[in-house]
Image 1 (tube, rainbow, N blue to C red):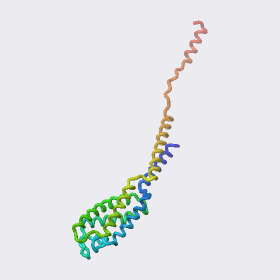
Image 2 (cartoon, rainbow, N blue to C red; image 1 turned 135 degrees about the vertical axis):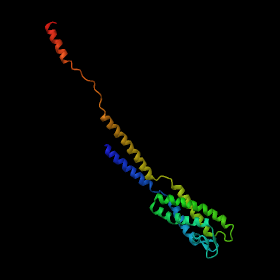
Image 3 (cartoon, rainbow, N blue to C red; image 1 turned 135 degrees about the horizontal axis):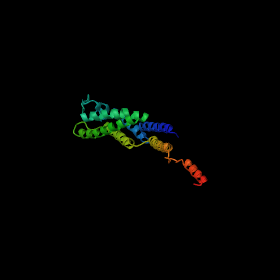
Image 4 (tube, helix red, strand yellow; image 1 turned 90 degrees about the vertical axis):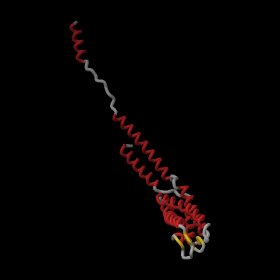
Length: 208
């Protein structure tokens, strides 16, 4: 293999590695994320607190039914909408690592903010309803699934890394071979003694 072909192979291997790093291998956790998305949809339509539904948590202040929504509940609701309602379906369909990592961060913050919401509901007249529990379950399932797969390398990424290492080794071998070809051993100069030998023979013939 020539140096040019080895370099081309190394570039292709590096490109394959970058491409593999852009995907997220969900494996069996895809089912968990699908369940989380379904649970989030239920959260939107089920009673959240008192007579207020889950989608009303997106509006800060007091709902039309008189339920007060705190700023932390609104933040949690919006983060869940973006991370679980939008980016998670995108990740399930496309396996894009970027959308998955962003969704992971958003649902994590939403889950812990939702826990604070339960404490807030304990101090108000409108306690937590079924929808709030379902919403917490949805963000927890998504948080758990993403934590298991977000930083794990996929089989494609492992294969691409192995190919990069293999091509790097081939480049080293080609370089060493070419270095050995370029090396020319230094030869000692050969002294021409033919004239001296002819003169000695001539003197010997004359009896000198």
